[in-house]
Figure 1 (tube, rainbow, N blue to C red):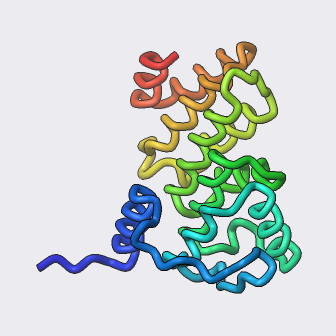
Figure 2 (figure 1 turned 45 degrees about the vertical axis):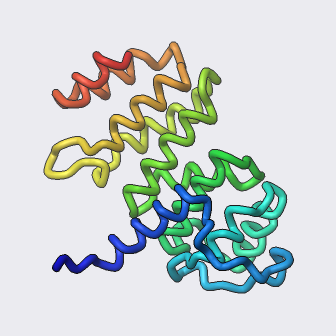
Length: 192
């Protein structure tokens, strides 16, 4: 018999929840964001998660503002909530999304960093935004995006996002950055 860790159970739950649209979750009892009290440092539970995913961009912005005023930045939330915040910016843009996505690139949880990198590529597709490209290039070089000197998948996600953003003047810098390791060099040659 296999025993699943708490992390594995959470990942399975969130995957099933997102895939099914939360049909197995309890209905939310909250009428508005201002009376929604929960612990952002604890794992997201089904009713809270369903309620969060149903919020409009305006309500998510209000919720972010409410918790920001209590000095809760993205890093202060449980990883499941951080992943939710980053994912929500891909589907419903609100005023805090730019900060959430950029903070997500430096998150401790790789799943959050990957989601942020992919979302940035999608949102800024063909924008030629040099500032965003520089941020991605800095995130690419984070030590926690490698393991024992080997690139992790996030570096490929960042390269792909850089391609999507399409800053023509950065192509040589991106190539030089990617060519530092055979795996990222190969990926760069296939994608660019």
